[in-house]
Length: 103
Image 1 (cartoon, rainbow, N blue to C red):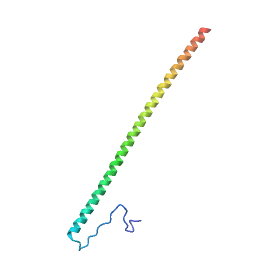
Image 2 (image 1 turned 180 degrees about the vertical axis):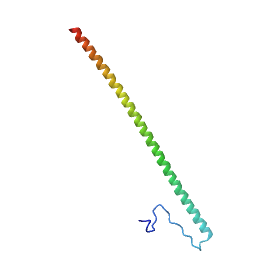
Image 3 (image 1 turned 90 degrees about the vertical axis):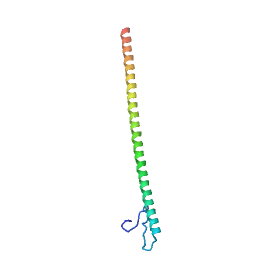
Image 4 (image 1 turned 90 degrees about the horizontal axis):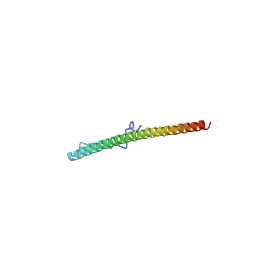
């Protein structure tokens, strides 16, 4: 809606209008200023893109680390459960041997 009314967004500097009576030095200064603003805007956009890419990489690395940790924890829990099952089976076998010896 703002663009349709001719209003500019808050991020765009107003365009410099050159009057025919502007001295050449002023025209050069305005051109330099516009170029500096354009370069600063481009640099800021590159910085934002770099930060976004770095954030995405950090998130991907954290996710991969979390998945590795979860996989390791599941494997360790499985080994512990298997160890407990073997101990329980051995205890049951001993109890059966003792029960048969008493008969």
